[in-house]
Length: 268
Image (cartoon, rainbow, N blue to C red):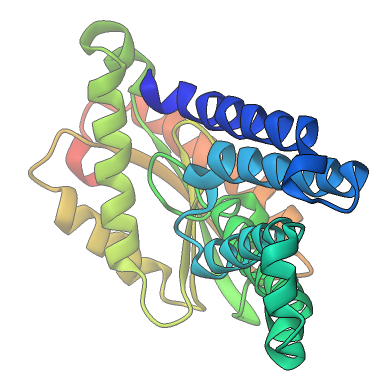
């Protein structure tokens, strides 16, 4: 609760200090109450923005450094409104320029670099499924393989597990399946979660069989079964391959339901 109130407490204290300075600007010797008020309000605003957004960007060092530089710049501008301090800073023009214009330029430079980095990170995060950390559909645009086998997976009985054992158990099942998908991928191969219980793997051409064998081997002793469909595709034919492999997967699922002889840990 104190953390949430801290920005307002700091702003209140700074505001009181600014009001006192403005009221007694003649006694203190300020040249202009308007300049003092503008510089003070700008500093208070920057302080408030920093305190309320720090937790969102604290992991981005360039943004943190840039924010500190802007706060330093505005603090320096505010301090040089005091005639006693301004008298001394005027004696060292180069240092004054570095502190004033240099810190302002550097602050904006660091913030620009930090924002660019943050946007790149967020863009990559938007291509990840939150639960499994597999890629999502947005990553389809960055497929590196020219020709590949597309395997469309669908977990069996996830709805029943969610209904009878709870969504936490269902989520663990999804996470485990995603882990096995990830370990099955080799160079440039990719795994995606594209729906609640639907996954896609893109493998090197003609490697889909060994990929699925790996899945069966890893999940052989677990109560996780699946159906799948396979299509060979390129980036240009991806959409059509998704439709066809989805249809093949559905046909396999229907066959599984009708079959009484198939071992579930071998055929999903």
